Amino acid sequence: MSNLKAWNDLAAHAEEMRDADMRDLFAQDPERFTDFSLSMGPVFLDYSKNPVTRETMDRLFRLAREAGVPERMEAMFSGERINVTEGRSVLHVALRDFSGRSVYVDGEDVLPDVRAVYERMRDFCDRVRSGERRGHTGKPVTDVVNIGIGGSDLGPRMATRALEHLDPRGPRAHFVANVDPMDLERTLRQLDPERTLFIVSSKSFTTQETMANARAARQWLLERLGDESAVAAHFVAVSTNTKRVREFGIDTENMFRFWDWVGGRFSLWSSIGLSIALAVGTDNFEELLRGAHLVDEHFRTAPLEKNIPAIMGLLGVWQVNFRGAECQAILPYSQALEWLPSYLQQAEMESNGKRATLEGGLVGCHTSPVIWGAAGTNGQHAFFQLLHQGTRRIPCDFIGFARSSDFLPEQHTLLLANFFAQTEALLQGRSLQEARQELLEQGEDEAEADRLAPHKVHPGNRPSSSILLRELSPYCLGALIALYEHKIFTQGAIWNINSFDQWGVELGKQLAKRVLPELEGDRTEGSHDPSTLGLIEVWRAMGESDDK
Ligand code: G6Q
Image 1: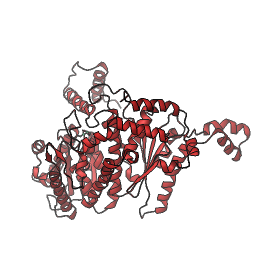
Image 2: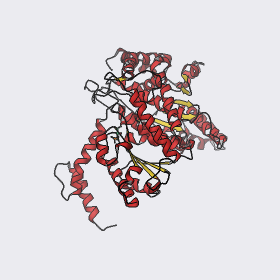
Image 3: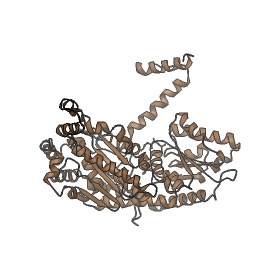
Image 4: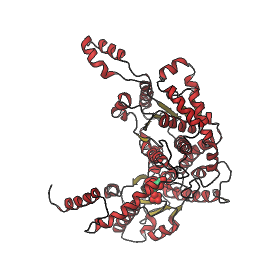
């Protein structure tokens, strides 16, 4: 992409913009907020607090066109195998397609199969939730445990935590991911085996952590219910791998399928979302899909100039490649979205943390920034210090819901006051003179004001985007997640990388398999680097010693 004309034009423009101050840009242009904001359905994006001008945006739109973003988007929606390293289509959008169109993979419409699985899922969830489908001893299900990791954990976990307040009568959802036995132990400790349903969620059904936790959970259940036939009532599987599910001992009657064209980190819309549907109900789950579909249609049809996810992607490219940003903060002003930063960390960094181009060359520019964040207002009392006064300028996404719930609505207003005030403070900052004046007004003498004022300077001119959604509903949440999915898509297309494979994750899976037999045995092979070899030896010694 650095050989594209638009890329070089942007580089030249970035030089001109190097010292641009957003406060001046606002002062010069009374229409700035109107021109640099967009609304679509329940979504509103304000990107006016980014260091861009009309010219910047025009050049970014040209870059998107030269890089072929619209064509790539069409290739995705039409089922082409755009995941070229795994030879797969990328069709999570098909899972939430309510348009009535067909979606073809190898000449076959996939939607009838999608609907059939979805109907089975609906029927199953409705029967569990109504108490019709019970446990082995006849008791209704009160607790659901999703055992999965990565994409088979973070999506369902994030969405369930965001929405579970909608149906307090639904079963409680628990999530076990880590192979650290503490994760499973802490969860099982709270559960009654007669009332617990385990969902083993794994696309491959070979993932070490998930299989270990699933085996241990089955053992726990058998020890308590004492009957092999209890497994059928208490275990279901979500996977693409029927053979492995059968080998594990789960009847495929109790299996919910999905397809290789659904990437792990994009799979919450598939039967991987079973825990969401069980916790909040199938109508709410469908609303989640509908919200995402709204954004899919927008992404596919809106011109780039009005296309919210495309603009989010382009702003990121501007920040990373032309303004030197190394990370991106995700700041949901919603406790319900506390898992969103972790979820987006995977979605963005696993998708676009790549250095090989589609053709196998080196990408030649930075790709995904480091994604991190936490729910506001908690973050304000922790790392916001660095956002305001640190040496780096970190682009921030502020996310909030306009409407409050019925519980303490005035406190919701307080939450949003913080949201808006933070974006303003990042923009406006506080000058040395202002800081000094304030100190004098507080009664400090001149010398003390001079001494303290530099510590109170906030440089301001720090970038943020604000996403305001109408309310914390499944529909709005679905829309929000899809916005980020398509932002990621846009950036991957511009960087000319494959956003849909994850070879870096695969390596970890292989390496652990190699080390395990050595730890289980009593000999360490010489085939490690000296540090790894040393660590294994120290581990053995520590384990065997009686020292405190
Ligand atoms: C996601 C990744 C990865 C994956 C996990 C779990 O896109 O591929 O996070 O979801 O490694 O894999 P399984 O679902 O196959 O257990």
